[in-house]
Image (cartoon, rainbow, N blue to C red; front, side, top):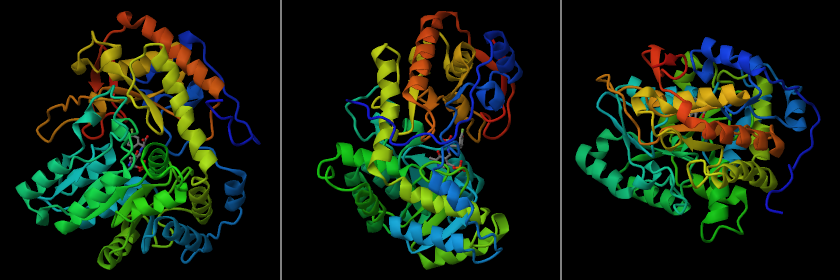
Length: 456
Ligand SMILES: CC1=C(O)/C(=C\N=C(/Cc2ccc(O)c(F)c2)C(=O)O)C(COP(=O)(O)O)=CN1
């Protein structure tokens, strides 16, 4: 059987409901055609994000009862710290409330006006913190990553070493505080980086004395793809592959809300003593003591347990294959999606889905709204709206104009995914009736979160 049954059984349920279509039309109008502004009670199947929306296990829920809520030196902190050290091999860990808490600390400490931070495609909060500190993000991902339908490129997250070296030669290694390597690459479509590329990037970086910092938000999915696709890793355990991956990094930022399988949490990890000392001095300003970093004791306990559970092969195989299941259904029906299918989501190619809508009328934004009207399924725009504007106020018009169908971990069944696929196929059949959008309210930063639209 191609797709394994869920490697867990349900112990608690949260009833779902679907609004009548006329109420869905009202709800999305009230939300300004922005799925971020819909109320959870009006959403049937929520594929907005896999961030913080994952189902915890009975062991994690039991762990909440072990919360040591001491202000300093909580037992749960030592459990989290030792778990990260064991899994990733880093010497030091600084806890934060979530991933952007770690990005804030890292960028404030290492990014200065005039810094250049190369990386494999931008991510919104990561780039925002680099720019807030005067840095310039430079995309050094391989060109294949910007091509939506590229099924034979198995590691679309890979860094183009020539682009990276050209940047070093152009701006000087002294102006590159670190390279940010996303494993996996969210906005490329949840695409992995090969172990070979991680090794080569590390070697090139060390040659120039440049730090390598992972954004390891979905590192277990990356490890799964290495095991499934890269020569020489099929007989290695996920834990062994993860340990080798992190041997090619000097540190990492992590959002626990994804591959930590918790609803809140994050950390900044590193080997460097000076970076650790600066981060512990700064964390108290933004997150709290270096022994809780904005998390409760009980959340740190659930986080430590979740990090271990995520390394289970059956768990991660099912998780990634569920995404592939949905991707295959859509692809077989002729729906344009990013291929290969990524680790956490299926990404619809809105440009190909709605070729009659120019990118300045935000095709991905209106497609996400239309899918909600069709089915009560919430998805996320990951195109021109998310890309925002340059410092000069120009829109980026990214090559990838995508709608993300993001699967939370251990939440939905294959039957839910069949429903989603059928709704998208119905929307595809009436795509010619769909009209573009324009802003009626455009926030100055990260405009996709609270922007509002109406039809042109
Ligand atoms: C690869 C990476 C992430 O995916 C990530 C978050 N991701 C989210 C939430 C989100 C974030 C930014 C958006 O524009 C967005 F619309 C959605 C997501 O849905 O994918 C963070 C930041 O981790 P935090 O969310 O724990 O602070 C760092 N790195």
